[in-house]
Length: 120
Image (cartoon, rainbow, N blue to C red; front, side, top):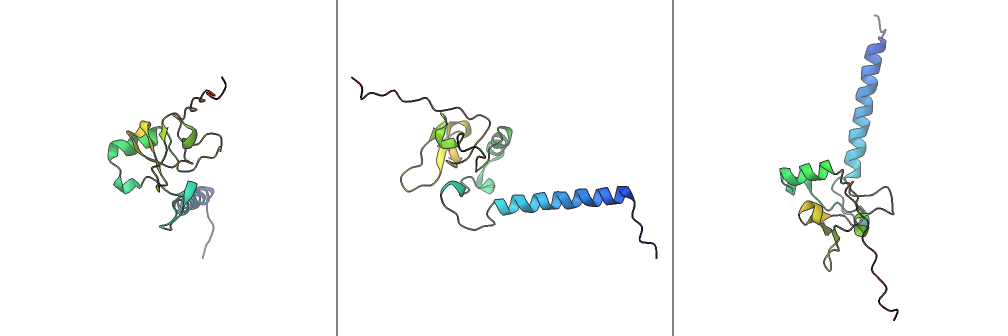
């Protein structure tokens, strides 16, 4: 029996394996249905979002967890803090849709500094 494999077949299998690992990593990052709290909680269930909202989130590259702690939704001008007892805030970019305070998108804009009114 000849078990030789061509370079093309080896590369294709390597790409399939890489894609499989990427999908598995993405799914595990979604939490797999486990309950989480705080900044790692998934605030926007894709199955409950409409096609327009999903498209907008994809277009601006929204992620539930920012890789840069200096650029998170909670520090963005478009963000509205969560209501009492809620973990997720709201975002003007998504027509008031839910966002993770620790999330990020490419439309992130630093919140304006509040002037110090204590000085007289």
